Each structure stands twice: as structure tokens, then as C-alpha cells.
Length: 165
View 1 (cartoon, rainbow, N blue to C red):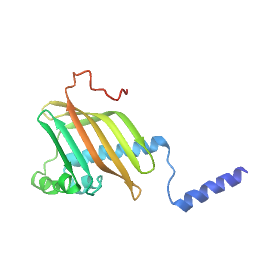
View 2 (tube, one colour; view 1 turned 135 degrees about the vertical axis):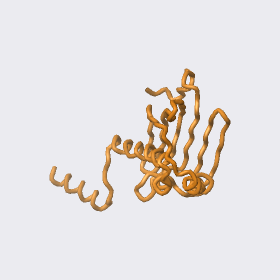
View 3 (cartoon, rainbow, N blue to C red; view 1 turned 45 degrees about the vertical axis):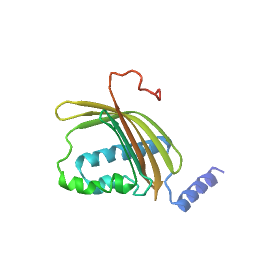
View 4 (cartoon, rainbow, N blue to C red; view 1 turned 120 degrees about the vertical axis):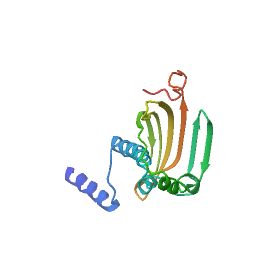
């Protein structure tokens, strides 16, 4: 019986052409997209950076800072217009960042990620934000369709709305 179960497993895997992953492996793949997108942006590598994003009309980005907020919809309004900016400003960003406190929910084709993000500029200025990213799976790759970052004062004690460690 064991021989048949193993054979059936390999038949399903070979017929579907998909690699079966554990929950933790999928979460690590999603984190790799989140971190890779930020690093590529910092490197001002447009081709690499844009490869993490879906290029559709429903792509959504929201940034909330002390200066206000900005929301844009559609790849052309979010990432499509950054290629020229990267060419005109090719110097990589020298800040460092750290993502912590991940909460990742996913199914076969949709993922939602929440995390804390801390930045330290080259001159030591610190910025903290709560971020959420929604991803869809297209052709077996996770692509970002929505990104929200909300900056806050690190000393504020009421910003942990997700109550996670």
C-alpha cells in the first residue's frame, strides 16, 4: 500500500508540474519578494524592481507620512513612471532597513503580508512604518498588486493594531 501512495504522490506532482511546498517555505518565498522589492528599489535597479510588481491597471500604492498621504492606482502611475526617475537619480539609497513582526496570510493565488519596517538613513535618522502588501500569484511567481506604508512615531504605544509579537 505504501508503494502505491508514494507512486500516486509522484504521479500527481509530475502531472501538475508544481513543486509542493510547506507553509513555512511559502511564507519565506513571500518574504523574499517583500525584501527583494525594497532592495531593488534601493539599488535603483528598475528592471529587477519592476519584476516584483504586477503591471496591471489595478495596482495600488498608498503612502502616509508626516507630510500627508499619497495614493495612486495603476502600474503606469506607480512603477511605470519610475524608470526615468531611476535613470535621472542613479545613486543607490544608502539607508538600511529591517522588516520584523510579519503576519502572512495566503492561499494558492493570493497573499497578504503585514510587517513593521524600520529605516536608518546614512546620517542616522530613523523612520518607522507599518506596511501591508497584497500579492497575487501569476505564472507561479508572486507579484505585488498593493502596497501601503504608514509612518508613525516609534514612541507611540497604540500602533500595534494587529497584536502580534
